Picture (cartoon, rainbow, N blue to C red):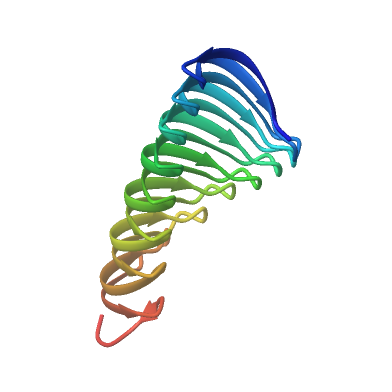
Amino acid sequence: GNVYQGLWENDEKQGHGTVQMHNGDTYTGSWRSSKYDGYGVFKYSYGEEYRGNYKNGARNGNGVLTYTNGAAYEGEWLNDRADGIGKMRYINGDLYEGEFQSGLKSGKGKYQFTDGSVYIGNWCDDEKNGIGMMHYNNGDIYQGEWQMGVRSGRGIYEAKTKHVYKGEWKNDVFHGIG
């Protein structure tokens, strides 16, 4: 079973304590009514680690989750999910800074690709969606509408050669008269 070392009050874990779980996970931090509450460090047996705030047994407030593959999320949490303003650094070096909702990129954000390309704009359910601007690593720029991660709707594409396409896009390609 689990082994707890720490303060007890009225037969409940209270204050500071550590629990070593039967599966190898450990939590060290603040407790209230036998639930994680306040600042704590949770080390998962498979290598992930969360350092941050808890409320009522769930990650809530600010914290950092480091994944086993080296990726990391730092920012706001709500009920165990990234929610609010945060930064996600991916294992390939890409970096997203912006809004999250229910663990997904949603709202306004900036995504920097390791190849030098940068997207600044709106996101929905982890996809570029709405109005956004993409600066490609070759110097080209697209500014306009996105749907489910691809250019779709009205937009302007300016190549570094100064050739410009202004018009409709569908499924990431020119569509109609530009």
